[in-house]
Length: 322
Image (tube, rainbow, N blue to C red; front, side, top):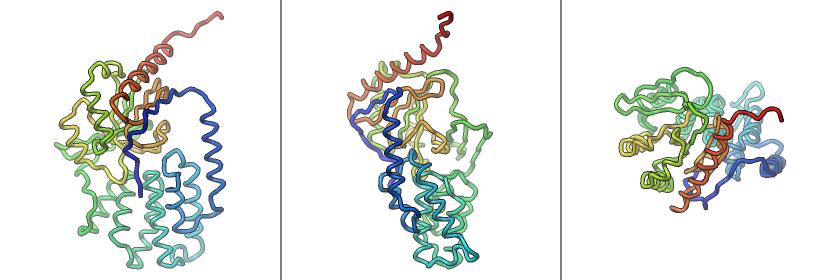
């Protein structure tokens, strides 16, 4: 399965103003959905998703097809037991794909399918690893740890010793790793002002590293950026905490936190890295994608100025008497 892409992208800068772009995107989505089979069969879903629909912006169009496929497979008095081994294994791969591309969105059917695989004695290390990854994507930490204990001989991602989910108050949340206590803590993405920058990046992405090091080397550019900024790492297929730990230890000014539930971040249509999201009062106003070369710094600077201008206009009292 292919996760979010680490890509340079040739300096795409989108000023988020009403346009026909959203209308065209809707038409494209409608066309793709109409081209889908009336009902996918086990083994079809992963290929269907990877044919241009693997980004989170397609979740509402694609997941209903997965749900319908699973409902059909589980129907009847015998449920999943009626499927031949090959079809059941294919359905397991589809469940893994659903939870990978649309992180943690469908853990329950994945568990049901795995239990049937295990009942038949055909659950291999691959199926265990896929389910473990689904538990991580769904932030079902205790289930992930319990599964790892049941299969100590398999190479599964090592998780922190402690988890602190905090209060479930809604809104955007991130996980912050404390290596000194081996604790992963969840907290709100605190928005104390009207202007905020969210940088989607990852230390394992070379283009992200180039962007972050360019920021470190250009204090004038940093001065243009909102004071309130977050470096948020996607978690495709795992947490990769050791990479996060090493980066944060050396680069405190670009300290990374982990996204909690990617599908809740409605302004992020793709988790490719790096990306710069400028928000005013929680609304996306400027968006810069990629870091092809050092000239991208000027693109980010222009976006920051545009976002600041929007924030200043938003603070001005409404004109009356006109």
